[in-house]
Image (tube, rainbow, N blue to C red):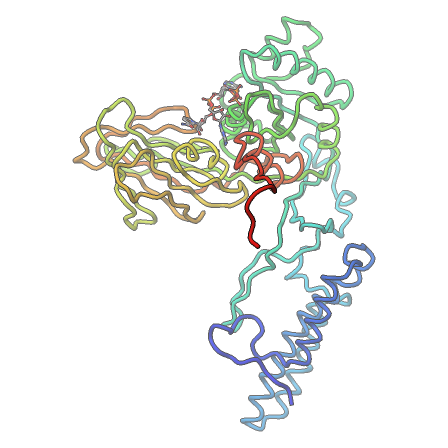
Length: 487
Ligand SMILES: NC(=O)c1ccc[n+]([C@@H]2O[C@H](COP(=O)([O-])OP(=O)(O)OC[C@H]3O[C@@H](n4cnc5c(N)ncnc54)[C@H](O)[C@@H]3O)[C@@H](O)[C@H]2O)c1
Ligand SMILES: Nc1ncnc2c1ncn2[C@@H]1O[C@H](COP(=O)(O)OP(=O)(O)OP(=O)(O)O)[C@@H](O)[C@H]1O
C-alpha cells in the first residue's frame, strides 16, 4: 500500500497526494542529479533535463491517477481510472513530445540555432537579440518560466535559483551612439579615439550629440561620417536605429543617456570616467577589449527598472492631460525646496492611505537609485535587479518613520493638501524641478521600459563591487587572533 503525505493545509504545497514510491524515486534522482559532478557536463544535461521534466510530468500524472484511485475506492469506478490513465499517457506524449520536454513549462530558446532563422533583410539596420534567463553555474538557456501556478488549489512557484539575464545578438550590431560627460578633456580625447576605432575596426555607424560632432569636426574633417540629430522628433526615433549606447562619464551620464530614451532603451555600456560609478563597471583603459567582446556577445545584462511619474495639476480638468510622463532611473524627490516650513505630503498606495510626510521631503526610488539619494536619507541598498519601489523619507520629524520597500506593481500618489503651508518641489534624477502647488499631486508607478546595462561580470558581482569600491561598505580592520577567546 502506498503511503501518502498528510494533506494538512500548511503542507498542501506541490507534493500532496503523490505516492511515496514514485515521489521518492523522483526526489532521489533529482538529488543525485543536483549533487552529481556530471551535472555540468553538456551531454548529461541534454540527457537529464528531458528526464527530469518528464518525471515532473509523470509525477502529475501519478497524482491524477492516485487521486482517481482513491475516488474509485470510494465509488468503485474502475473504468474511469483506466480511461484517465490512458488519457494521461496520451496527454503526456502530446505535451512532452518524444523527448519528454513539456513545451509550456520549459524555455527552449537555447537549443535553436536562431541565427540561421533570421531573415537578413529584415534586420538590415538594427541588430536583433534575445534575452534569456541564465542560471548560476549552468550555461544552457533551458529553464522553466518564472511562474506561479494554482493547479487544483496547490500553490507552486518556479525554482528559486540565481538568474542572470543574458543578451545574445541574433544579427550583428551596426549602429552605436556614444554619449559623453560635457566639459571633460579626458572624455573628449577618449571619445575621438573610440569613434575612430569603432569605425575603422568594427565598421560601425556612429551617432553622437550635436555639440560633440561639432567638437570632433573642429579637430579634423575626418569625422565627417559621424551622425547626429536635429531635433526632439529625431531623438524620439533613435531607439529604432541604435543597437548599443556607450556612455563615457560617471553615473550622471548613465542617467542622462536613460533620459534620452522616453520609451524602449537599447543596451547601455557604461564606461567609468567619474569619481564614483555605481552603474559604470567598465574601465575606459580597456575599452577595445570590452567592446570587442560585447559586440560579439553574449552579454550579461542588468535590467534596471525605471519609474514613470505624472504631475497632476489641480487646475487641470483631466488627469495626465497636461504633462507627459517623466521617466527616472534613480528617483523622484518631493521636497520643501526653498521653503523653510515642513513638507506636508499625503501619500497613498493604490488608493490606501500610507502616511503624511512632515519633514524635508520624500524620495520614491528605484532599486538602482537605492545607492544614491535614498541611501543618504537612510534607505536600504537593494540589488538593482529587485523590482521594488523604495519609499524613503528625508529628515522626517518623527521618531518612527522608517523607510519602506513596496512591490513593483503599486501606484503611489503624493498629494500636496489644500491646507499645506507651502508648495512642494519635485525633481527627477536630480533634475527638472517642478513646483507642486496645494491640490497638485505626483503619481508614480513602475515604467514598462527598463534600462538594460551591460555587466562587467554579472549583476550581483557588479553590484557588490560597486558598494565595496564606491562606499567601502562595511570596511573594518580584522580583529587580531591575539586576544581573549572562548575556552
Ligand atoms: N544627498 C545626496 O546624496 C544627494 C543629493 C542630491 C542628489 N543626489 C543624487 O544625485 C543624482 C544625480 O546624479 P548626477 O550625477 O546627475 O548629479 P551630481 O553630479 O550632483 O552627482 C551626484 C552623485 O550621486 C552619485 N550617483 C548618481 N546615481 C547614483 C546611483 N544610482 N548610485 C550611487 N550613486 C549615484 C553620482 O555618482 C555622484 O557622485 C540624483 O539622482 C540623486 O540620487 C544625491
Ligand atoms: N551628455 C550630457 N549632456 C548634458 N549633461 C550631461 C551629459 N552627461 C552627463 N551630464 C551631466 O553632467 C553631470 C556630471 O556627470 P557625471 O556624473 O557622469 O560625471 P561626474 O560628476 O564626473 O561623475 P561622478 O559623479 O562619479 O564624480 C551630471 O549632472 C549629468 O547629468
